Image (cartoon, rainbow, N blue to C red; front, side, top):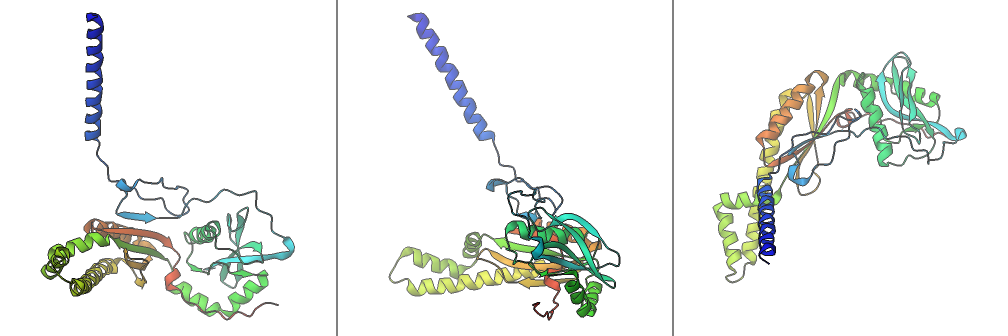
Length: 328
């Protein structure tokens, strides 16, 4: 009996030590803030998903790796073949870029020429291309590959012609416009920068800093009499303060990037959290300087989240209007 009691005491003591060790391990674990950035577009690395606790405030988002061919899609009807156009470049000799294009099996990408400019194309059915994820990524991937060695004028997604002769007519009719833009965009890339904030956190900071807003919030919270006018005034003051702070952040970011970019364009923010949606035109020789400056800004504005993409063809800085006659 005494022996069983002694054995039970040993088991209880061992269980107690195990429980205490578990508590120690739980207390010693600390989340690590990751600074890992996704891989560059088209360079073959897909970033592993990160848990919310370790998500960086500065993300450089780049293109996923090329998809593997899918054998379950039907082959194109050769009698209905057309030419998909990705971009326009300056080139006198025929070029091939490999199997990168839109299609069930990634189509071979090559050039169609007029004088010293060329369209980068691949064979495709004469159908309206659906803007699926695979198709859009293929379109972007071709442009990203070509622009590594050439200045490009990107064409809109889904630009399809019937024959090489039709493409050469396009190049002939808009030759001067294409050449002018190619000269202006020579050795330049586009980078996208989106800036987001935690709106509730910013409102809490504004309430702590502004005495009038803090007083109105106190009146509303105390529920003494009608709070309708106090809520209206509170809402107006908060909106004005948010607008002023957003404009200050955006102005400071644009100013910080002015000397490392050629031009910039501000697009409309998307959603309540985004305060800046901008594109920057950057010289090839200044890419590293621009990249370093964005990272520096990300460290200075710790309360903001930056989504940084590129390099891309200069989508936001090219505006050529083409008059094309419908083929019959």
